[in-house]
Amino acid sequence: MTSHDGLDTEPDTGAAAAAERALGDWLGVTRPVEAVNTELETALSDRHSICVSAYEIMSHLAGNRGWTPLSAVCKAVDRSQPRISRLVTQMQDGGLVERTRVNGDGRAFQLRLTRKGRRVYFAASATLVEAFERIRRERPLVSRLTAASAEA
Image (cartoon, helix red, strand yellow):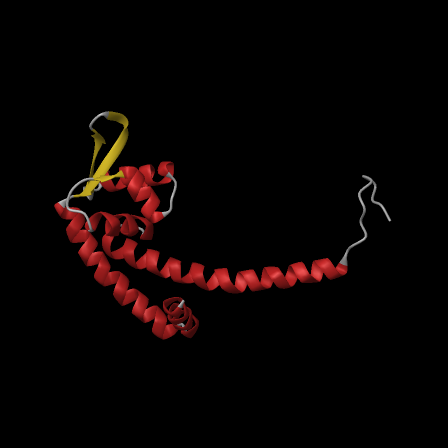
């Protein structure tokens, strides 16, 4: 059977059913992860005016007292340079990081946490631990997943 546009309209019910099961399985994995991420984002935003990605950048920078190349930050947090640059601009505007050009390479930048950034990072670390411990208590699936991740 064909439709008025000439495309085959006979459904492949086996493939459709398999696709629906796959979608259900995928959503069963992603929705709990998204819910946990939303809770962590909310806790960090409400208490420290940062997002999880900003915290991740700060965590990387906190391990270095000096300057860190932006390219190293992008690699460490596994995000694109344009995405990180936009976030770093917001963090710089908030007084959390300093950014300067790399000597000898006019296109490259390097970053470091400011004193304020270090204070926010350490306070946010406590918030993150507190929020994640609560999430683990309230969501047994998360607790099982983190245990399985530690074993892997």
